[in-house]
Image (cartoon, rainbow, N blue to C red; front, side, top):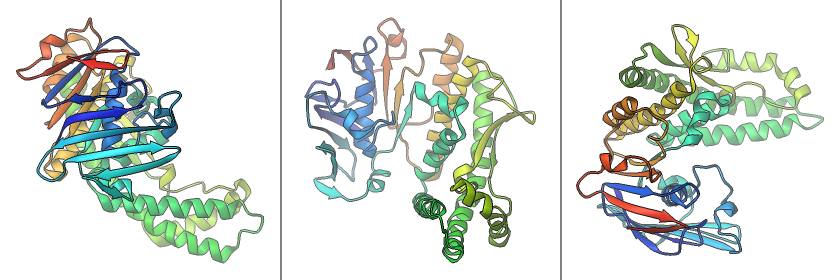
Length: 357
């Protein structure tokens, strides 16, 4: 599945027009602040109904306007178009002209993998950013995992609300604990296996591009115990502390993922360049894992992905790129983007939100 065209209306600084994207490779060339990343964000927004920058929906609307919309035309045998609109705080999504009630229905339409500077947070940021990355990776191909994650978060929210009450009844907590354990153990089991498989592929990929061997991903669950009885006992032992803190202190929402080398945490000791490459190759591995699990290839959105790599690592990274249906790249004018141009590549200049060939 590919994007054949994208029309935007009052979306950030982008001009209200349709842009032809009928090419496997599309280059967006321009200075910073002109709208290159905004265009990638509009593509992502049409694919998932949300921003990869973590922005609020209202932040996507051009200043002075009350609504915005993106409409993507798709090239593929199943679906022809997606439209996402925000109007006075309300979001609506249409797939092939029919309204969708749940954004999860978009997940398998035109899967996109975005490479951006914010990915550095997956390496050097707090534990929740790594959990988000690995949850996203698994949700791309496992809808049951996504449902279990949603259910777990719903029960967790209810449990935290009860802990904040002065009289948090034991019977009700017991009932919520049973649900929390059921969904939590399902998540833990899948996380353990997925991290093992991801680590094997990712370690080999990082060695191939960087020359550094022995990098592994380690999954570190928060709960002590491998079955419902052990976890229930552990939760019971911490209940007084949780009532005092008014917060659920353990569970999959506190799990950690560590980047290890020779039994030592790697990302904290890695150089800036090594962390940047780590982040890029996490996305490469994410795309590769999606393809292996589904037999499909994603659309890649690469925002200044090559900018901070030296020529040799740039060459190796491009050689290691996963299979893709379509790729969109952003470049500064002084970058040697012509070297990467192939027959049929579309090259657009971006200035003040206007995208022109």
